[in-house]
Length: 118
Image (cartoon, rainbow, N blue to C red; front, top):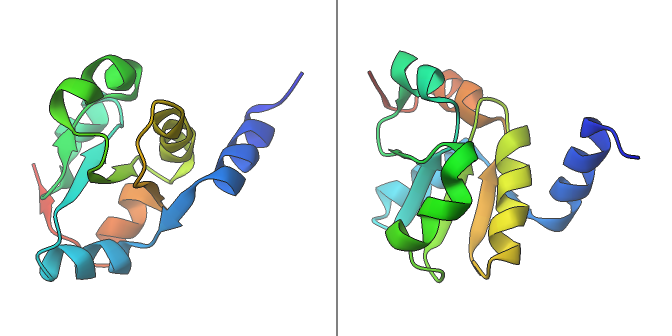
């Protein structure tokens, strides 16, 4: 039996993580990055990264295919980078070839001065 921390550590070892500055640089350069916020709806409602779209973690697997192509450059965001790491691993299993988790999540996005929308 594994703990949540063990699952997160395994996921992080098998996925790519990117920093807020890397994502902001890619967006500024005009790269077609699909930033997806997977936090709970109430977290999203309190504020979210301006360029992000919302797909809650609970419905990510059932909604991602109709909204994002498998070859898109996808960056998943949660509050701290743990839920997004688990979700990035799942998307890899679904055939997404260019998916990453935002290290530090929304907290680092805000701390770095990233654009936030209500």
